[in-house]
Image (cartoon, rainbow, N blue to C red; front, side):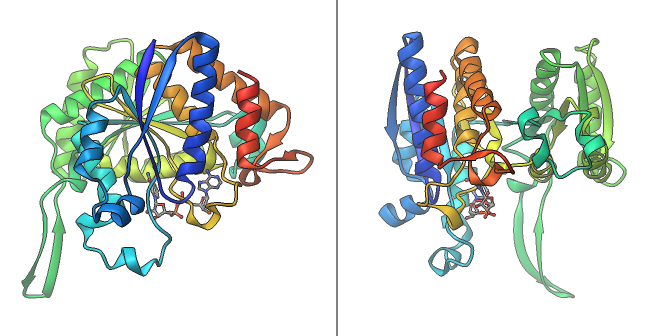
Length: 360
Ligand code: NAD
């Protein structure tokens, strides 16, 4: 199989971690007889410096012509005056929203799994962690309040600002189907998150999700209010299998779900739309505080590459080979600084990549 992969390494640790994923994909190609071609493109602060825009049209066009997209992370250091003075639409993060929308990626899947070898890194009480964490947040990605009508004006109370949460039946149906299809391949349980006690958009969300659920009689559906979900994730995360959310609720809850598994450097994500072309990225940001020191954990990006193989290229065996190699390295006690604990062997980011490549 031959595949053309667009690489948006981005900023900070982005180039280090995407290099790790590329090395792993090259090894998979060698071992299983596939050819992966990589095309590096600009997005983020590096694109602003080179072209004045966070996401040049050329990058969008080349991503659209690719079979899939691998993204590192974008964004400058907090407090970087050059970036903070830019208007919203020219900030690095605007490029993220734009590429998702340009590629029509309406669903974002973020698995949050507690690796047995890293159980010690879980910040939850031992008896809670022991019950296990293995859930996937399915987040709607190109609708809702992040894309709704917004503005500022002046009224009786002085200046005001507003953002609008708006969802159509079609938008909720298509993301709900992704969640139910995924649940059919997992433990057959969907928890749909809303704030239906207050928000009209949530009441529509709930109605539509219940209608879609009728197509999946084997899947159990639970409705949960978003505030309760924030509590349940720390109280009893083992109850969750597939967690279906709107854009903003998913943004917040998926960070919480990531945090309870111990390290942000371990978790991958995929964004997909109506086609097989997806965008795969670690859930963490560009970590400017550790960029260039070769201490960033490449595993989240490497596992994102595994998701690409499974979900975009239909190569489940190859994906499993990567996941098994990651598990083997962790079982052997190798750790990057972010997941280091007593008695383990600390390695640099590039060394972690090499160890994983060697075990494929
Ligand atoms: P961050 O995820 O970059 O970093 C949070 C903390 O986790 C830092 O201490 C960092 O060193 C650590 N960390 C993150 N990834 C790591 C890894 N792979 N290995 C080891 N440690 C790791 O979040 P932040 O500091 O809030 O944001 C930094 C920049 O990233 C900002 O400009 C922000 O806008 C951007 N950001 C981008 C994305 C994205 O590209 N999808 C997502 C979140 C934040």
